Length: 238
Image 1 (cartoon, rainbow, N blue to C red):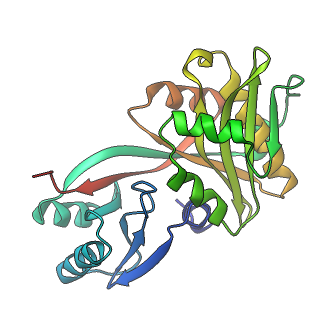
Image 2: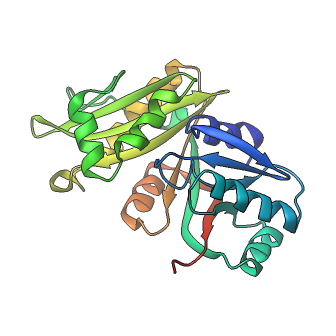
């Protein structure tokens, strides 16, 4: 994964606070999920740095958690030695923005809106995107927008998108269960791409759990290609 995409991935979904522990940067998530509550490699590291990162997590009263790319065998092996187990394998996918702006979106189907409407917050909350995660969106310092999706004459989907250095990243795509598999998510992604193009972003990316096979299939159908993969590493619960 190139530098611009890697930076956009981090800066469009920031932790509340960061602390460096040797070769790791530890995020303080404040209940906003693993992405912002994990330690990730930012340089050369040692086993003592792993211990220092664990200590920082403890200081912040959050469970020790690491995020490592799949091809970083040295780190994933070391984490296993320290008692960490792999969780939630995730793919990072990307596509040229131009590939998603070739069709006109049907009327009243998808809109770029900022700040998000109350109904969007309700849809996110119904899908486990809690107020702490929604607070992350408000902390993003780069250009940002929400995407509202409508179908059957009602609000049924929502997403968040932000841009950094010509790369748009989409986060928190949520469709109400009764309205899934009806094409709405695809139109919302196209709406996100149109907004991104207006911000002069030439690429659009996202992260998706490999276990979410329906979403992975949708993104592949739209033309997204996997550019990297990562997993979380946590210690088993006592």
